Amino acid sequence: MSLQDAADAIKAMGRGHATRDVHDLSLLWAEDRLCVDVGAGIKPLSHGAEADLRFLTGLDGRVLQGFADDTDLFRQMIQHRLSKVNQGVVLSFDNQDVLSIRKEPPVGPSSVLSVAGEFAELDRVERVARVRQSLEIRFVSQEALEPPRRRGDLSHAGVLVEINGSVRVSPYVVRMVCVNGMMRTITPEVVVAGRELESVRKSFRRALDDSKQLCRDFIALDEQQVPNPTALLTNQFRHHGVAPRYQVAVMEQLPSLPDNPTAYDVVNLVTAVGREHRRLQWAAPQLVKSLADNRCTHCGTLLR
Image (cartoon, rainbow, N blue to C red):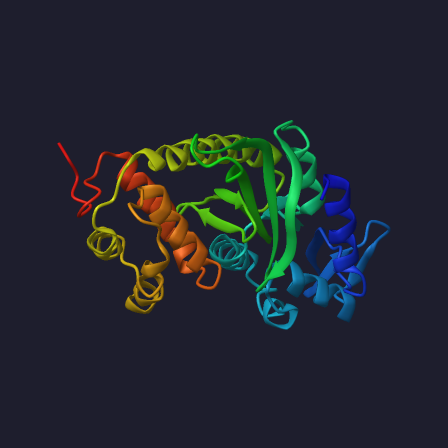
């Protein structure tokens, strides 16, 4: 789908889900009562303002009321609390009397789509979906690579974005064949929620560059023969800490490998099984990197 189609899909997902739009609050004490500055005057902390306070900080106004006689202790307490548990919340004390609490709006889907639009290579979106508590967007590069001897077996570099308060950006490669396989890196870069579009932009560039390199390394594996796929996978899975149940899932599919398999075939097998076992989507790029780093295709030992 296009970026516009992705934007429409994301908008449709949000229908019927109310979201809060509170970004700032000013508190102060007046006549020994915790009050809120509403711009047009000072009012006691209402139920609505107390709900806003809990939304922004996680703190209860009734608890804060007990600090009316010791504002210094209050300042120390709230600064410590927010520094530990609330990213994106900014505190300031105006004239030593008014506590201003401001929550930076997080980088959301529209900002991510805007950044993606700056990269001409990322001309389409493969998938938009809710995965657990995150919104997942998979951007795909228009450039396709294929092994010289396997026409039509195309691999595309891409950028995977997960949004859930913070923005998680990671490179991945997708094979556009009749049954898609995907491999993603094990060390995605995290961008903390806030007005950090430049950080998102830099992360996109880094992720796209890394996925292009992963794609090139993957294609090059078709030149490496693997005389003993079982030994190779056993050693690599042990090295990368793949759980036994995932190892078994892959080993059961070894008979489906072609005669005289290459390292490319072995990685393809891992990604195919990885469609049902997400942990293997993380293991596949590690296998690519190990073989690209000149490891033995028989046992996986690093060659000096």
